[in-house]
Structures are given as C-alpha cells and as structure tokens.
Image 1 (cartoon, one colour):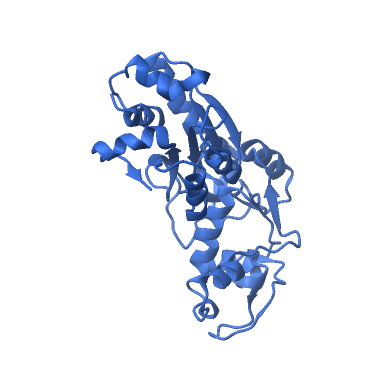
Image 2 (cartoon, rainbow, N blue to C red):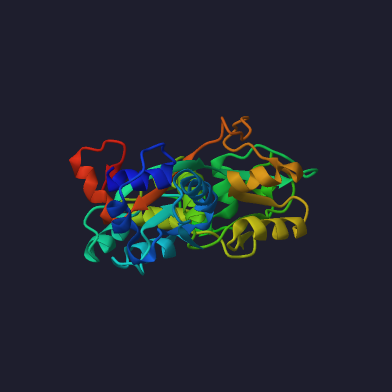
Length: 310
C-alpha cells in the first residue's frame, strides 16, 4: 500500500490494509517508530489516533512531543532525517512563510489532512451573570486602542473601558476581566482572527485602511493593563487553577474541548447574539490539521484525491 495511506491511517484512523515491511522501514527509518510533534490543543486528537493506529496494526507507539504550534512547525520544517519529526499536528493551516522554510530545508511536497474540529467558547463561573456578547463588544473590551467615534476617519485612542457597561449600557455593570490564550499560541491566533477581526469588519474606522497588515495590527493588538490575563500552556490545567481563583464575573475564552471537561461549573455566554449552546453537533468549528512530510507526500502524485498537497 502507498506510503500516503500509511500516513492517512495514522492521522485519520482509516481502515486500510497493512503496509509491506519494506515500506514500513522507509517510514520508520532508524527510529523504528514515527515521530510526531503537536500543539497542546491537538494533543487529544493525536493521542486518540495513535492509540487506534497501535491497536489495529500492532506497530510501535509513535513518539509524541507537545509544544506550542509555532515551535512545532519550526521543528517539523528544520530538516529531513530521523532526528526531525515526521508529522506535525496543528489547529491551523501552515503559513506561506512556514511552507517556504520547509521547502528551503528539502521538503518539496507536504501532505495536509484534516483530523478533527475544535472551537472557542466564552465562559463564566456558574452563578455569575450570563449575558449576550457581540463581537464588537468583545473588541471594545480587549483592544489596546479603539476608534474615538463611529466615523470612518476616526482617530484611535487608548482603551480606557473598565466595566462592561462602559461599552454598552445594556451590558452588566461589572469589571472587565478576561482570561485567554497565551501569546504565540494557535488558540490566540484563532481568537484574534475570528473574534477581533470579525468585529473590526463591522467598524467603520477599519474600512479605510489601505494596507491589510496595518489594519490587522491595529485590530488585534490586545491591551496590557491587566484586563486580559494570559493562560499559559498547558491551557487545560492552568485554566482551571486561574479561573477558580478569579474574582466573580471573570470571563474566559478557551477551547471547546477544555470547556467540555469542565462544563459542570461553567456557564457559556452567547456570542454575536447566538443562542446556540456548544455541543458535539452545534459548535462553531475550525479545522485541526496534520501535515505529513515529503516521504509520504510523493505518493500523492499517483492519483490520491483524499488529501491536498501544497
């Protein structure tokens, strides 16, 4: 069977025939096992897929290293050989710059496969006020600078909002306190992309920016005056510690997979006036992605259509 299918079996749990010994040797090399590097957010998926791979096909358990997404990609793209990871699991696509680094270091083709879904939810402790949040409320609470008025050519001023009611009188009169993902994590990147940039698309002052890079920087720079507190990785453990100690009314932005294990003491806030609560059927999704290195990607040229190449 093709090497591509061996990789697909690992990352998607597909029921495929076992590979020939020679092909296994080419994949496993001197290590005799696969080496996977994964972001913290994707570790759950990697563990589940690895367990099925080992159980169904009796191969050695993959070596798995967990780190933040950016570092995981750097390790994957650093070179070819047994000392480098064979697979990187991410909650996002590789950037063009990361892909160019891979190519520069000898990885001509890379397979990218979807392995799962995750989402972000906004929560508070049970007993604290639960209220609807629009994306623009979220932006005006967390952005370092906000437009002075609603005009297209409004100047940006430092964000001085201290209470939710400072943003909109219909919101609770309670201090703005938000726990969220740490800098340089894929979870924070997702939050900025969908929460902050989603809000900025609705704000007139951002529609007159000519350069996208300037607009994104202005939109996604988060205030550093204590309103927003980063949750270091591993987020699941550190979130529980910080949230349990947090003052009443504190909100948190966290992955759906983390909320699901802690839902007994947390309430979910609807975002953008949505009344849909998170569930395995209804939560908003972003793709978790796994990228396999070139040793498997070359087989895609023979006609595989279940994966994409970049």
